[in-house]
Image (cartoon, rainbow, N blue to C red; front, side, top):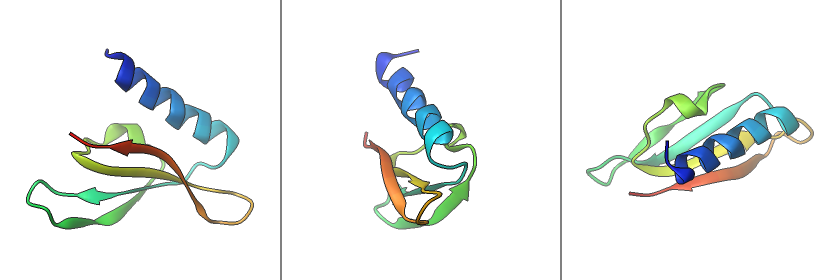
Length: 71
């Protein structure tokens, strides 16, 4: 496991404990088109080529950026 991957998992777990259990994944496909936002409780199970992982905050329902991913 690389350090970058370990840091990503740490950020996601930290957000799960402190903010909410709901996440949104947004981003681009390899052909440059955006994909529909994915609402999930387990963001670490998705293979993202280019995009962002957001946590939905409990207090106000707004998104907070956790991780940006680009390859």
